[in-house]
Amino acid sequence: MDLGKLSRRQFLGASGIVTLGLLAGCGAEETLLPAATIEPAEFNADSALQLLKDGNARFVTNRTIDPNQDPNRRSTTAKGQKPFATIVGCVDSRVGPEVVFDRGIGDLLVVRTAGHVIDAVEIGSIEFGVAELGTPLVLVLGHQKCGAVNATIESIESNTPAPDQIVSIVEHIRPAFDAVTATDNEPADLLDAVVRENTKLTVAALKAAPLLVELEAAGKVRIIGGYYSLDSGIVEFF
Ligand SMILES: [Zn+2]
Image 1 (cartoon, rainbow, N blue to C red):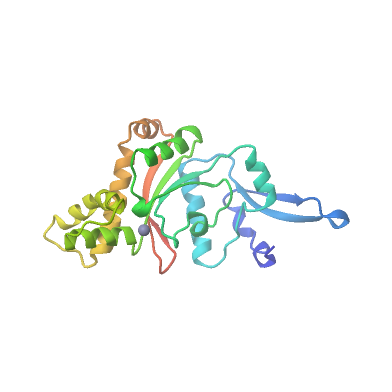
Image 2 (image 1 turned 60 degrees about the horizontal axis):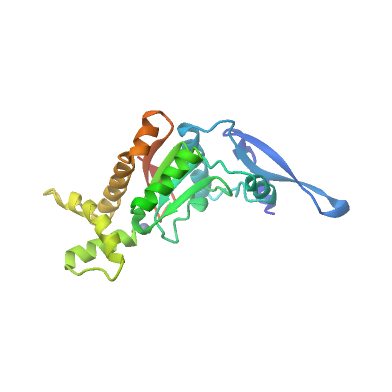
């Protein structure tokens, strides 16, 4: 237990109800330990986005509280889950959603592929999160120096096919490269421009999935994009 983190519980006040968890089974010296659980009464796209922003701000400023990672939360969520957001991110080992948003068990439904490319299976998984678990926010999270996007650029520019199934990732990212290079204005940072375009295209693809179209029209979900900086840890939302 990080006692330093317990003193920072005032962070929790603004965004939700703070609950105290009794850590039982410690014999005579049973200790009341804060469970650092954050639960807004009702989730919607705005409150879900605010939770992500709050968590990322804690992460960026080294004031993480590691919420919802205790045995109490584990046993509560074993009975049922209600994640407040779906994160569609890259497999990159430096961009773990629970870490960069300072969240814990049962908070985020996460779908990760290289370059956050999506196909039928991924779209179905995202639809499951929204339709069955009721996540009101879907965030597609691209990131700085994405290796999958970089491999795509290298493959296209060198006219060398990527090996085996990696080629399918390249083909999913290719439209972003094509869109960025279609104009006469070559961006100063091609990789970064393609990363951002790739995120926009994934958002657009999700917004065109029939079930998500229906749920978005009914106000049940908002689908947005984001960009994670490896250098600063900051997530920009757009
Ligand atoms: Zn990546």
